[in-house]
Length: 314
Image (cartoon, rainbow, N blue to C red; front, side, top):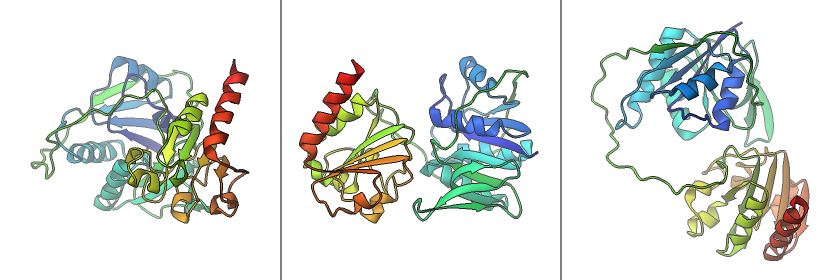
């Protein structure tokens, strides 16, 4: 059976849900290897070991380099491990790295994947989730970017000792881009948008007031999303934008409030397991893909839903 290499730019003491899903997928293969472009704590190593990872390849440094260090680490890990498939997250940063190295190493890259079989057949979404396709690389190392919420988090038994190795990186030229300043984002207790099992999203129909959307999301322990119209209006941060030019989500439950459902927005959420749409316009396109639809004023519907959920939780 082929071997799998997972790459993380960084790894905290408690790996994220998306990271645990990648480790679970890698554990299905004959050998699972993890490469991290930063230091890995003992606590994180113990978690990694619980997923049957045989080797941990670490190369810290390059804190001020935008992408060069990560590229060097993953390239060195691919060459050292000779892995058949490389698994990375499906965000913009990792898609960039996967594409660059696939070209550099004469490999292949498949994005938006939801599964990888033992014989390296990749299942992926096509046409904004309208179709599911299967693809297989014809030659070279296969780089796959995995969509979150696609693989069940399933740690195994720690039946082998984790072998931690320091990667030796070749002397690199001065990075073309350096990070000159950073600013920490506001800390939120809500789950990460791309990993949340429940997402409540608001659009133009909220008319600048995301209060009811946030209240319902908190009642459901979910994340808050938005359409491009809402983020462009400055009602909420662009980090919350879902759609063709934003992030793609695939939660168990997606609640669309005041979003018309244009094709660009559908592209970011229509693979959700269950979609509930709330809109005053009975002809809104979002009702075409919704499992349940409510024609009504979101400023009245959302508070009632949040109140009833909290009542039942009490």
